Image (cartoon, rainbow, N blue to C red):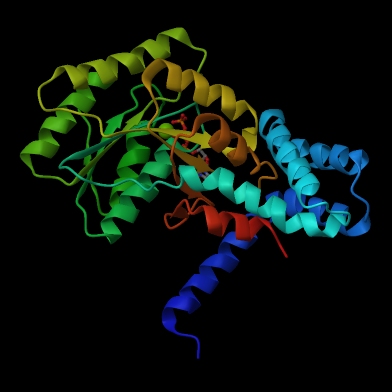
Length: 312
Ligand SMILES: Nc1nc2c(ncn2[C@@H]2O[C@H](COP(=O)(O)OP(=O)(O)OP(=O)(O)O)[C@@H](O)[C@H]2O)c(=O)[nH]1
Ligand SMILES: [Mg+2]
């Protein structure tokens, strides 16, 4: 008999599989067909595998790693039949993701999360979903409206605060993002709030002045006694594929990213970028977002992700 827990697990798995269908088509189906249609293991097979992985946005560096490991495995086990390699590649790709499966541990109060990223990647929407996620886990949440740039940013965040049963703070007299976030931390402390999530303006990673503003926010918060940013979370849109490597590198070099949330996994064929991000940076991937609904945010789980994209 199937119990409630395994039923839930099954329905989540089907949900994830559906959301990842385009990425899965690129990675799993292509590789599966490649190994099924051919029998001999030769250089041409590896060239084709390389091509498929690069098309799926796995990135050249990570692709080469997978190919080299597979070649070694073939040699070591004296393999002749390519069908034996599909499961091996799936396992190697899982090994790339496992080290970045590190959920956030909420270990102090207020736990401060600063959300950063390029324009339109889904920062504010992710905040709404995160707030709801924590609300469901019985945490009190305060949202700080630190985006002083985008028209309607405060209204958008306020609306998410209502939907997620969280508190909202915005000071119309203050135009400076660091001042707004600083005040909100004081309020969170005073009111004994569990988690504070601060929104920031979208900024291109190569915009010097906006990157300086972000550094200032971090500086102002760190300079004050007993105030620590517990998580600097970069939001990345999976649709931009390999470009997210540059975004992560620049944000990380400038202010130090401690966690990543990947959005818009639904509908993208470029979900393979997650392997490059994991392999090249080793920064925890905390959550993945698979849609616009408040419930479309999930803890990143390497095994679920691999099983959803690799159809056996
Ligand atoms: N399909 C899909 N759409 C998403 C997801 N996350 C966010 N969006 C949509 O992406 C668009 C931009 O979202 P915002 O949250 O406003 O993005 P932002 O990064 O805060 O944008 P700026 O504040 O302008 O920099 C909205 O239409 C969202 O509904 C997701 O996981 N899947
Ligand atoms: Mg926003």
